[in-house]
Length: 55
Image (cartoon, rainbow, N blue to C red; front, side, top):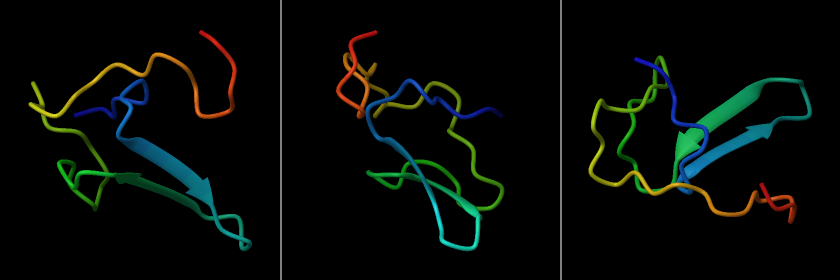
């Protein structure tokens, strides 16, 4: 299953060591390997990116 990167609950950060950390703010996704459940009830499209840019 893939990751819904366009969901407002998806968060991706990088550590100082260069590791990529992905997580779901509402803990609806599995942690290892990180993937969103098919037909997730918590999915909400991201209207504006977290960087402040409009899509």
